[in-house]
Amino acid sequence: MTEQCPRFQIAFLGAGRVGKTSILRRYLFGTFFEEYLETVEETYSQPYYINGKRQNIDYIDTAGSISFPAMQQIYMSQANAFVLVYAIDDKRSFEEMKNIWEKIKQARNNVLNIPVVIVGNNLDMENNRQIETFDALNWAFGENLGGCFLEVSAKTDQHIKDIFEILLEQLGNTRSEQKGPFRIRSTSLSRKPSDSTDLRQNLKTRKCMFKKSQTTERLNPSDKHFQDSVFDDFKQMTIKRIHQTLRGRKCFPSEDHTSSWFCQTLETSKAGKIVDQKKHLFHGNKNIHADMREKGMQSHLNLAKNSQINVRARFSNIFSGLVRKHFNKRLER
Image (tube, rainbow, N blue to C red; front, side):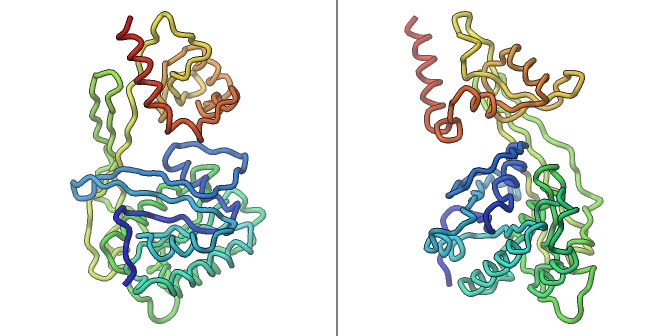
């Protein structure tokens, strides 16, 4: 039996330029970038409450152009779950996705126990479609993945959350072996949300500087008919996604508001009303926010990029150091 990783890891696999990174960023950060940057490997950690117990899940964004076959083999042999992505406007990517699935079956025992989702991205490119929905769904049904197939658009945010709901719903469950002819009721096309689901968000906010405020969002389970059609002895879990942010603060008078990193990213409506407070919490410069509204919800990452700051490469390593250094100076005064 394949030895599993100590952390729960979900690998995103597929050809290059199919949108694996875009799907993850849309789900985790609510952002989308047209510019393509080739991924080597990047891991995003997302906390959840699973049956009341906190669990961090690592989403591994892998390289599309596999220049390191040994790394690909590690993903296939050790990951706890898979999201296999192709582009509906790229026939080659669909064939590569199927080849990846064959390699996974060779590397793992009893793949029916492994959570998997097949994702056809670029639904916004319908006019350029090369892979018909029925053809992909028919293949997925033959691989006992009919209930785990979706077509999405990372650009428009269409069905992105459904990927992760279908994926996490498989935790601790076994997919049924589909026998006989193709049946719509045993595919994701028949998936409906449970009527008893409480979708209200639980908000918990702490009023201390730089404390984490936490919002939990319950994942929407499917109805019982779908569960009985796709799984053997389905076991229902309560899964809540944890949204965490840092609370903002007021600027100190001596701060350079035009160049400071500390500004908060906001999402606004056309009228300028704040409709959502997003991930990167910094000083709250009103001039920056006004400029963001004029440019249409531009993210802080873009602002930093315009200032020639490589946030993606440096942010995670030096942010905590900057905060400590800043407050140490304040204490010394």
